[in-house]
Length: 476
Image (cartoon, rainbow, N blue to C red; front, top):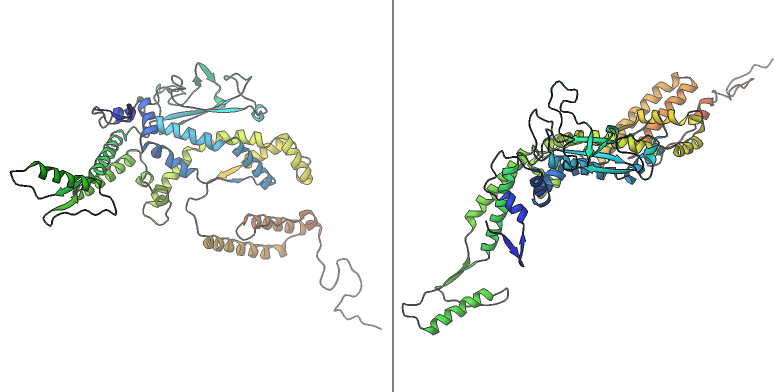
């Protein structure tokens, strides 16, 4: 195989030598270096790895903490989440585990040995750092036990990097697919998960061949075929030069130029119509083979994948959404790992003191630790649906909820004492405040004043003695 040279330098050596080699056959295992080459150089490599993760993380989770002043506590959490760049670390870990089959996230803090746990108080240290490791960084430590009688059977244990072990509370290990007993993964250096490239290695090689074919077709498409009347058997030098000049004029002709040919002559391009169908069909089949090998929808690998995937009503929409939901489930361990870190860094004692000042009746007699664990236990994060509803449909749905809310309040309120009636109104106000589509400004009520309020009786004020308006008093 010859190399392609540009200005004396060899171009594309890695991709050519690894993916155009004749010894790559269906069923071959990709090595660590081959997986890296596919991810970095192959046009489909980054799409196979990043496209599902990008779509899955395209929306922010809906955070709910009902036990506290929800808006303040949630905003503090989201602000710290963005400041710590958690989304970037999660995406990086997901990419690496899909490339190689396994990845790990670890916490680092100067002054705390890696084999010691980091205390909750130390998590708020500004110097806290987060590293994401690939299998070459952790090689030898994440092989996974193959002893069926061991409690650590096919479970990730202690992460060791450069001979330094990390405490298990400081790491989070994620695998791409479940490990198979006695199935060694070359790209991950252990009996762990598998790379998304493992089953797709051969069609990935075929895709490179299709790129070369496309390049050849493009080059040949610029060839002009001049059907010129050939001179007789006796040709003198003058005739030869005349035909050469005509070919040169044809070669140099551009838009706006005029050339003349005889009626018996013709100029056309190469007929590549027969190659269009064959190349297009073969390329589509290769993309489908790659997607099937990686167990992902083919739409994600197309040029307009994002637009077509999220087009509601298409046949592939449901299956694609199910695939994206499976990717979100795979990210749950990473989100749980970062959630606990961000909670400690966002809901500090100083932050809680501001909450106590703003809400003395609710949190004045509650300690920081009790409030923190209450918020942590009530913390809920759910993914919104990828299927975007029109604004009119959202408004109609919220109107139905509002009508049901009003009916419930009207039916229950007349039968409740003042305290429970105030609780009912507070519940209704909280639900109304959640309706951001119809009500932009929150409804704030003084619940304590509402509990103590006694409405005026019919015909007079409460506690008023004597004749009431509308009552006839007999005079005698």
